[in-house]
Length: 60
Length: 460
Image (cartoon, rainbow over all chains, first blue to last red; front, top):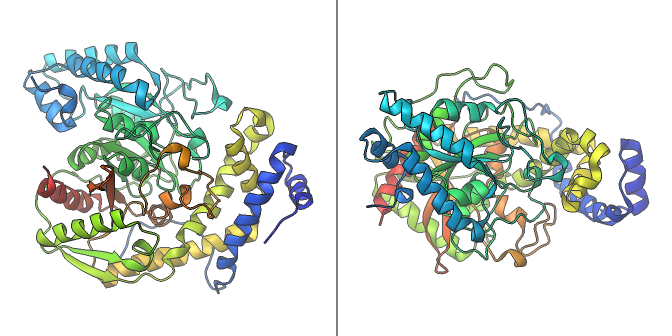
């Protein structure tokens, strides 16, 4: 998925962070790569799995 | 006389007990070695000579009075510059924290000092342990090469003999990767086994503290001093600490050691690494272990799940600093923090759901195949000259980049299980290959037992 520079600036405004102009292109490229890599997770059927980060050291 | 810095921590400790050397002798030998090696390896961010000399004198005074605190009494160690230290700056490799001196030690540092260890100084880390910038540290075995990270200085100091052991942190492989690339031993213990209080954070569910040492036994000795419940760390486990060296020499006959080939031995593994691991597994079999073929579905998702979690969590930790001191960050670190700030909640939740599935899959493999441990290459590639390495964490398109170095180390951070790396031979280039042993939660003792058996068998 390719993200535009405008989208990066809009998202950053919504998130309350300021991305300096010299970073925008690098962020755009990295965010695009990230979103591409996430697709593989979104294709999984995980509807019955709770998104809980809990570590139980008992394996039995 | 043997060079004191060539000894293991265990051997040096025995010399101290026999009064054949003093804690001050160990420190002076270490400082001399440090002076010689630092111009080429740059392992230390700060050397605290005066503090170290005072600590060594105090340690020796206690020994002279007949008080012995344990195997780390009088032993010079390095501490990654991510741990709070009240008598040295804690800058996390960043101008953002320049000159910051905390009021207290991190709990792990406090435990080392209580054990009588002598802190030589703070070791170099990538900025905030993110691995995006290029620190000055170089591989101890080939000074042109990448040392791994982010506990680069800790691993290099141990390998270069300017510390007998060192503290590192590991959120995606940052103890195991540099330990492996520099030919030393490191363990990421069970999640919650060592307190993280007073450590500059990345991710609350991925961060671990771990020791780096020259031998498996030394690593076990260090973990014995570092492990324990900390009521002020919400992730700390309130369970008894094993004696990690009690059965370390008991051998591995009858043990079942799993090998998963699809994720850990795919085409991405270079021939030098594959060959070394095949030989290592053969040694384990000769020692009486059974190698068990196992299948763990979707293990290949681990790096993606780990990266999403790390990106979002680290950016959350840096939110205020990024707003107030953005210009003080290295540009590549800042970009990663900005990217992490934009990770969608939907992606983060999908990653946590996938993590749950993967953790169950790993547990099921251990239980259904009755495994004592699993074996894998610590990383699938060899180190390279620094100038040949792109280090963008999210740039999976590079031929060899940071994602390759941490690909095999992500799983243990996501599952919370312990993982030990130890050298398993040299590639034709003369650079070391690392073998990773993954274990059941709180069963570090078994990993040390396997690693020690292998080390003893292959010691030249």
